[in-house]
Length: 558
Image (cartoon, rainbow, N blue to C red; front, side, top):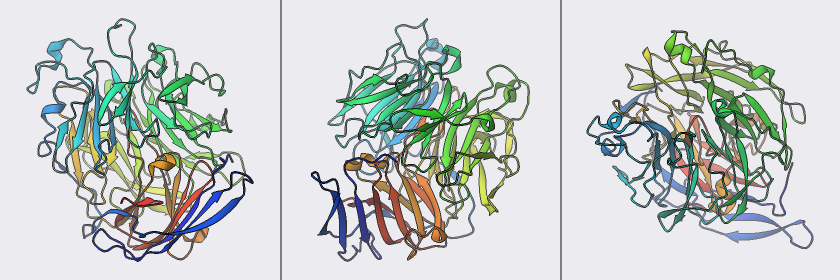
């Protein structure tokens, strides 16, 4: 386990806190490493104890996953026209706690291809600010036109605001198209940063992790096999400048992939990553990576351009270990009518042992899908306490994503209900989730590639159980790479009281970014203990946290 010179452990006890009724002022205990001795000393301070950012009562009734199309009522129709949409990312750009939406597009087609649904020409990439009831275009993002294939919103310069990363699938025949770029957030406007990222680099998804433990977030930019697989790891050296660390970190120079997922797979305190495409798992050993055995991840194809696509970690069986789901970008499902599955790999790694995964997709009920399913996530959509698998395969006549509802686990084998309404081969490129309206239910944005068809913002209207979402203050790198564990109240960190876990990440799925918020469904449980294990070896804890609220550690949202 890698540890920094600063070890932080926060213990906060709250009871019945809400937006309207602040909790009593408990004592918060903070252990801070002594610069001289390196040993932890303890100081005690008193705060108001209100960790709650927002709260919401769950919708009553039997859990069921349902959505409402709110694209038009949130004013997203116009700014999403003229796009070959290929990337989407959520993040709170303007600091109002509402997740904003970044949408990337391919702008390399003949202009008449965009002249549908009211568009006159190609639209640039759009940053859309969430005003609560509607979204508006942020004019502070420069109008650039490229082949945007991946996107994240993340604070790369540790100045407590979100910067923009756009990964672009550059073609040699289009030298005038915008390349992969980082835009610095400067007081709400954005300026291209002299990042040092190779202008010739083409990219798909973007991974974000602090692989070397220096407190700065690094970038993994994936390139697909069609351009020779030139994926690159970029080390953050400060001031939004990056250096190519691929070879030095022990990674292959021809690594090819479409999607990336990050998590501490082996529970050693370092953030590992999986690349969907080559289907390889890399374990962080401090400043270098080793490749884990990959035979279990092998995935046969039926024809050309049959590729694994998005990837996501999640604790499917609630045992505290991150399991892995991988989507598919198989042309064979569309061209030849050959159904293809998403695949689920259960993490069977024992403490201190070798990394072991077991593929259980078919056995757990993940039926093959009649179309592509590039983007995948493991999230609890109905808050019943059991994670579901969200895909961007279409259901319900092309208006809803196909969701495999989690039904529980039987001796380590999860069970899923197959999605209803699977129809004609149709899919969306990406579909990242976020709680856009703070009602405790994760909503979905489905970005459409064909300009003639709409993208969808779908509000989750599922009858649901209790819930809790957790974020970490920006001073701790927003906790990216950390993992949130929840326990029965009063059990502390007793494994017998474990209720589940979730990663804090901005790298999930395919061509997509998500908020660094861990969302956990609780079912009927209304009080939990929370432990957040951070990549530097520190931990943040909160005891007796009431359900149905978003909390931020260590200091709340004041």
